[in-house]
Image (cartoon, rainbow, N blue to C red; front, top):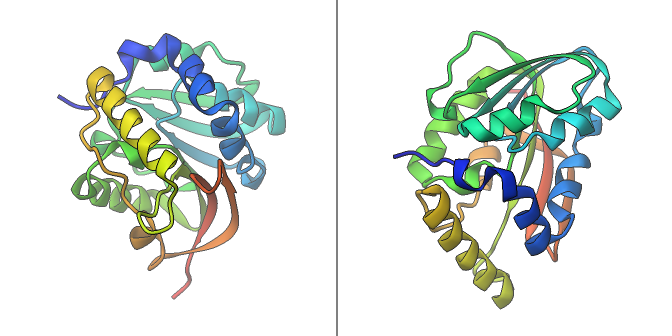
Length: 210
């Protein structure tokens, strides 16, 4: 059984606000200014779709967005969002099953990779990397925790979150993977921001030219 957020779709945003306040939103909104006008965008794991309305505030038309989400209920919530005159294709499918011939200007993965084991991450990362144009940008936001530098409360909170989402959503991992090992060989960070005492990281990555 794959990870699925259907059970908590309608309450997900409330849970997020109770635990982390508005930090999750800030960590994603800060990246959206890097979306060019009239670009092609792939959003993977966009949840309830509030990010669509934030994108629409910047670009109310001209974007072609493929919105890939494994939760049917999350898709239903996302479809109700204000998308302006942007063209959004909602795709109810796990990212590991998604295929396309499209090359995107922008890929957005908001708190996606913390759901997976390192083996699954390698598969997903390789796939998404192949979908991005050579001059495209990858907008990344997720939790980050260093066992040597991280705070004890962050470690405790991470364990609680993994326990909760394993029970409710069948999250397959209980360990946060350091994504630097995947991005660093191929991408340069052109913008970085940290939140919640460095527990959350937002990065705009641009493919490194060989």
